[in-house]
Amino acid sequence: MAKLRGKALVAQSGGPTTVINSSLCGVVQECIRSEEIDAVYGANNGILGVLLEDLFDITKESPETIAGLKRTPSAAAGSCRYKLKSLKDSARDYERIVDVFQAHGIRYFFYIGGNDSMDTADKLAQLAAQKGYDLRIMGVPKTIDNDLAETDHTPGYGSEVKYLATTTLESGRDTEALYTFDTATVVEAMGRNAGWIAAGAGVGHRTEEDAPHLVYVPEIPFTIEQFVKDVNETKKRLGRVVVLASEGLQNEKGEYLTSQTGAFAKDSFGHVQLGGVAEMLKAIIEKECGIKCRYNKPGTAQRNAMHFASLTDVNEAWLVGSEAVKAALAGKSGFMVTLIRESDSPYKVTTGFAPLEKVANGEKFLPRDFMNAEGNHITEKCRKYVLPLIKGEAPIKIGADGLPDYVRFKRYAVARKTPAFKP
Image 1: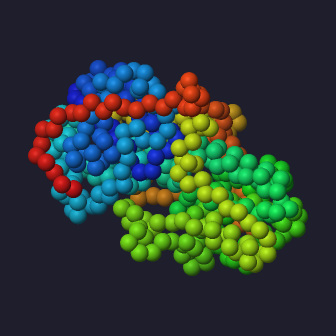
Image 2: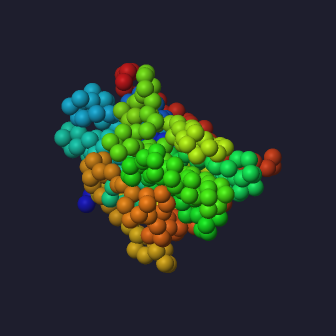
Image 3: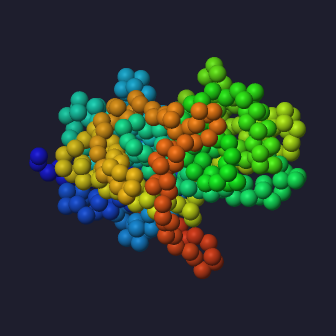
């Protein structure tokens, strides 16, 4: 295939993670090494930045800043939750994006994100082909939820569960020390429809004493009666209990136990806003079990904890970014890079490719055999899956004040070449 010369554009989307910048680093460093790519632009705040033609030149950043992305959490280029619909319903937006690409000579587009991002990238690839514009688009996987189809796991997940497992384990030590007063603790994990995060953090339960003692996920219907029974039995056995529960717990009707109502009931992607599971379970424990309970909600801290990131996760995040560029330069377009597990011991992965449309329209749920028969804790199969993903400690730079030294882009603005646009 003939070589394609032009500029590259990279954007980030969805919830930030500990390692999304490692993928960005992989994309940028591989682009800079290429003779076909003249410059690498970033879009401020994801696809919204493309629509607004709010671009900046990453190739003007220092090599130290670019390398520092690999040890910096969150989304350095800025993220968004702007939802593009079908090519028909959002035709104006899609046409605008291609116009911006053409105006700036952008021939390569790398989108780092989850299901919705892959859907946007897929539709852009379709429109560019229809318009006869030679554009290569590759998706780079990202999500702490680990629910992307077609890949063994997603960058961001390993660091998420490493941090949450440790936080829960340490919360258990606090409860253990004060069990004569604070007998129970509930820890709330992120996870809308899939229980990968809560289950993954369950690996902290290495002995009967270690927390979490009970784990609950969305895939298994939650009943108050069974929950009370589980808590009472654990309390009787250990004298205390630490519960780890997904925010997306659902009842037997498939309804979220705690979904918001009113003006902020859904986010811009149309997803139900969740929150409050920890408070609800705390109330149930105190009322039905008659014991004192506290709750912890790590919230967004759990997805940006670079100080305790998994080295495996950081390296794999960089790898999928780099491989996306290599594939595009080789002529590939319309795919997302995937991680393929070849073995657990020794742990070994390779990369592959999945059509964007398959990723966009799929969702990977926690297998039932990753949870025990009672539905209140993980199995050895789950533990075997998770442990390789949390191995190693990623190095970070500590400043003179004793705090992490993270990088920021200077954001050298790219001059606009198209008329103003209002999404």
